[in-house]
Amino acid sequence: MIRDGYLARWQGREYEASPDGDRVRIYLSEPAEGFAEVHPGRYVRVLPAGEAGELVYVRTVCSWRGHPFVVLAAEDGWLRLEYTGGRWPVAQSLGLETFEYGVYQGWVRASEVTDLREQRV
Image (cartoon, rainbow, N blue to C red):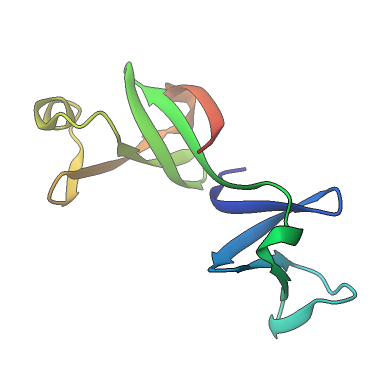
């Protein structure tokens, strides 16, 4: 699974989350007590920030051709990667697209990446 976003631990379970000042929104994809439906298949509960245990940002990272990347998406055996090495000549030599100034991305076969893992920030 490719994850990129906040996670909060509450009552022994990990939830997708969204910090909001002194509150944290936690989300589920199925109905549960105390969660309100915000749209079909999406339920939210708002907690005081102090009630949420761990609040971390998680992203999926990997290496491709020996260089560091964040994984943005996955589809049919391909991964959308964003180069995080910060060197334009390297991004250019890898054939990456310029998404915007200083941001380089590309689709690569999932079988070509190494060290695929979640990173907690």
